[in-house]
Image (cartoon, rainbow, N blue to C red; front, side, top):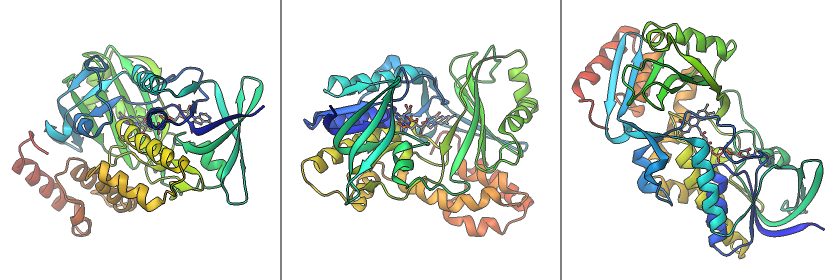
Length: 396
Ligand SMILES: Cc1cc2nc3c(=O)[nH]c(=O)nc-3n(C[C@H](O)[C@H](O)[C@H](O)COP(=O)(O)OP(=O)(O)OC[C@H]3O[C@@H](n4cnc5c(N)ncnc54)[C@H](O)[C@@H]3O)c2cc1C
């Protein structure tokens, strides 16, 4: 016998759990599934969250989940170091496993039913292209679920989008991140995140995100790799200032995964399917910050899914406007960033790391990109140093 429900959420990451919570709060019979045996495991993330996003959240994060305070970010490009503190740059490191479990428990408390070890493998559509049946695999068994509405919160490799035939990333739309949690580090400043740019970052950046005085997530991410990402990572570890910090370090656990830069689908509403979180590219560029934005996106998708179940027609435009309004102005800036920076990642311009550093630090305006593109390496360097000296580090 198939199981029937009002809203089926695929994925129990931040987007899925928050979608399940808001759908259940809207008095719908909600099931959320995840192919993982345990929510939040394995962790494939650098675990940093920006404090500036807290006012936008549909929940209050308990203090004990904010495990390590981050005062700001130090950027290093060539031999220029830029420090940004406070405001946009302030945040925390969380324990992603505990955080994801906490979010899924919020959904369960609201009445949603969680089924782990449950993988979506097939969708059956009707003539109007609405999903009528979802087939899921649980161990060796196959179960059918008949939902009224589906929320695709299944991340960067979205099975829902693949099964709908709308998983269409182009080259450069998906980044790869090679990352490790490392211990026994000698961090310069354990309360500052570190971001590095250079030839070891193929259209992206390298990072050290502290979790404690001696533990950090260390990685290299990029969208345009020309060799194995692991090799860029080892080049990064050889940088003078990084080498000193990792000299006696041990590898704890690998956290490598793909991340969404340009998007995998342009359609966030497809028949009775709503797409949320990474699957809808609802993370914020240029840092590909997705933990909190995905939970906000999921919350909205759950509300819209409830309306859809109650007979309201939901349009992509309405979804887009709602997310822009919810994450104003960050979401709009992020979308602009994708279009403008993609070209720069592949450019052979000798000053491309300086330019990206200027954008990451907010010292260069994206609107001035055309003008900046014309500049020589030396001129960009002068411009970056001037901007750095003009702005105190303690601002946005
Ligand atoms: C290495 C790395 C470091 C990152 N660091 C940060 C950071 O420091 N800060 C930050 O804010 N963001 C970071 N991000 C981005 C962030 O992790 C994502 O944006 C966020 O996890 C997106 O949430 P989501 O719920 O949309 O997707 P996910 O968290 O990916 O959740 C999707 C869920 O769907 C499940 N699923 C997939 N397919 C199926 C299926 N067929 N059936 C059932 N379940 C399925 C998966 O098991 C998964 O649990 C990082 C990303 C990477 C790759």
